Length: 267
Length: 298
Image 1 (cartoon, chains in turn orange, red):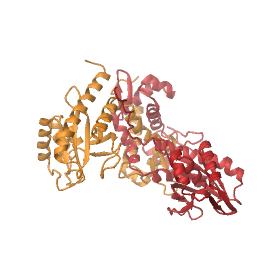
Image 2: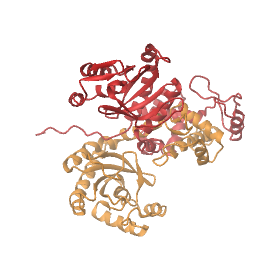
Image 3: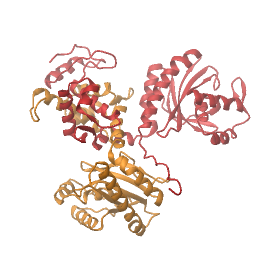
Image 4: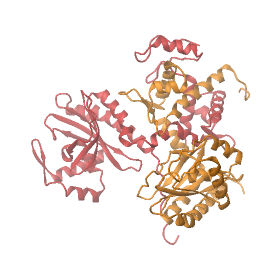
């Protein structure tokens, strides 16, 4: 077994080929459901033939499928199963589900569980009432952290330096007239979120939505996940959101944190 | 490092592939055997194999479990897991085990979660059309009709959707009606006339409902010159992640082209393989399922 850090030609080759193959898969997202060979090659900054060999390997193992008519590629079942399996095999899944379901039933609200993946928030559980909210996000969606309740709940426990580094990369696109437009205002918002124990985004992400989110805290004080309650802004007032939804989200988040601590063994 | 023989799988420039591979100093191993490209990037293939094993496992796996299941040496499996872990797609679970991390959602699931149903099924259905040369339809119920949401018809391959056919005369209609729950099926049956028109006369509503129930039980249905004289087809159900039949896919051909035995034999098998694939895909569309409500007093 090579010692960690030893970089033989062979292991560098391994890292390189695996990384480039997985980079191809990462290029697919909610805006790019399918990609052409040219797009993939230019994304990897390599020749078409090089990209083609990676694609054929991905295709052989079911990680991409080619549309025989357009020639474009899209993720295959094997790739899709990776995301699915990561959701259902996570300890968060088992720990949070009964608690989220109870919250959903008691308040008849849209409840979700969100996690930070890199700089973005990813929705990993969602229980929604029958009427779909406009602009609401499905499981597997990625969205920005700084202007959403979930994202703010995930950021509010992080060291200020980490938060600033993340905020420095945002473009603060005003999604609605209420969106906070600069790092300073978001930082202030995170501070007050921290003080009250939950984050909110009131029509900042979409005029149709208002949401509160509470962090599921790990022992070190950072957030493992966020419990988010989203509502249609025309149906639920800010008073209800702050007065009823916020305490419910905080309570659920605390219970999930306790269930998680218990599962992972420890006092 | 061996150069591959000079023929690509398809007619694309094989020599340029070879030159490119040499330029990147990568190992290119021609892999023989069905379904495998000649130009297989072995290291990537191994990484994908381990990811796949993790995605199919119910619980986290150790490096030695992974090595054993993939017939790799422990050293190779270890090196690959270290790479996957450095890239953030797997994480440790306990002292020795690994599981997929949430970052794996970015490897295709994210795009999938935003694809609509007809969009997901279309590439698979196009492949079925290419294999058979027959017309392929994906239809949903709009009693007393069915409406196509994907339609691939030779020779022009017109993808015009929204075609409406009387449900009783189509194989899809039998599948879609047959899969309704009892109450809904009865309500819908009442919307159909007592005698249903077919090219050679009429059939009774009762006979049709019976045939539909039978089609649902066995998992496929046929139509034999019931819509238009000279056409026959076979259909199979498409289920969503919760096991509800939401559409039916059909392979339709003509009497001159396909015998009834072909339609109910090899063509049915090809169709079922494709619907099986679509059903697997839709089964991966994750919706948080509500755990059963606690009973009163508990």
